[in-house]
Amino acid sequence: MAKPLELDEVWVGRIKQILDGLEYGSVQIVVHDGKITQIDKTERKRFETAAAPQAQAPLQAVKSTKQKSKV
Image 1 (tube, rainbow, N blue to C red):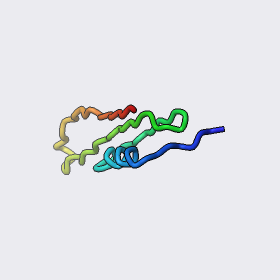
Image 2: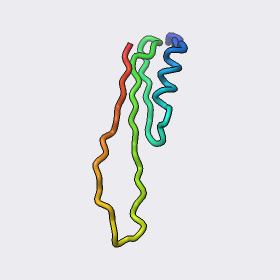
Image 3: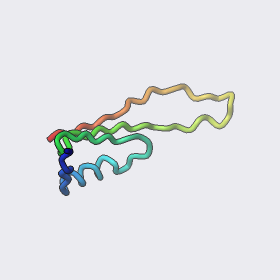
């Protein structure tokens, strides 16, 4: 039988902090034995395309950020 998840105010605060300001992306919460052990954040940035089709902006590489929080 699965153990009930132990979620205290510390973890709620950490999750809120990671979600704060996230516009596009995902948050993955890893649980082991009913305890949160890790939180991964993948953030995506979206850029508007140039207004005129002839004047295309050069592509830019954007590094995805990943935050981990371990107990």
